[in-house]
Length: 330
Image 1 (cartoon, rainbow, N blue to C red):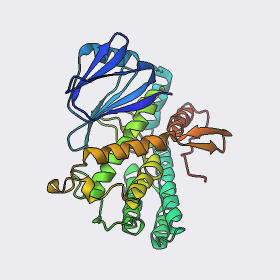
Image 2: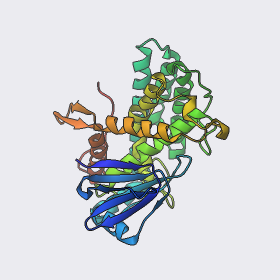
Image 3: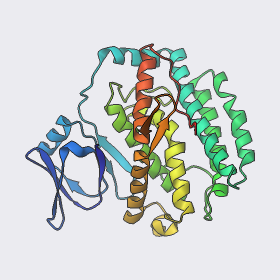
Image 4: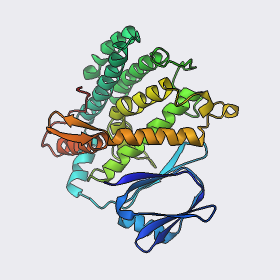
């Protein structure tokens, strides 16, 4: 099985025959077997050469880059190998037709909000009294089918998330400063943590989209724009509650991440290398965790669930089966 490789030490990546070699700043070398590399996360200063780019492109290996503050800066997205003009036409048609677009966008918000509600129900059943937030979100979820535009739908989605985040101080055992979601830049340790974990989910989804014929720049909930893979943002909405948020709750409640995991002098903007490694290791383990799929009647990993979501969207776009978002059933 292919896996993600995370590089935290400064150095260089080079092609060596038909594989990849990483050399760190102490001239220590490590080979990455090309057939086992799913994608690469560069969390440090790194140099490359063109022959490396060629072998990454030939083998369809995306590379994701993060800066010193653990902020995502971009991805090397290899040339599409699974192209389909037919699907592209249908994908654009479903964006251009406002009714078709809104239908898909509602499905994304419906799936995300349901998984958010289930998160709250899980913790409410374990002594965290978040019933008032659950009731508010349930009311807001009733508004989703009535939305007449993407803007109105985004408004409901924003209110659901605002209500959800208001419940976090109750769910998290540590004393936290978290009144609202702030992104650019995050203003406290919780916002920094959310930004980092959400970005990881986004890149994981992007990696799965690459394995399909979907074009990652044509989206339905988020507006397509230049220099971003907005379909990843759409699909990531569904998985952020069950993968990202639950990971954050777990890390904080087990004290694996504390205020010491951030650079206080930078207003908790910067995750330490050790904290970043802990987060990616826990997320990778979660991605490989398997569950029994109720419809497929077989065991699948969380990573495969992302790819399955892409396949479901393809079937919808081609008119084979209406898209239904992934919802927690256990």
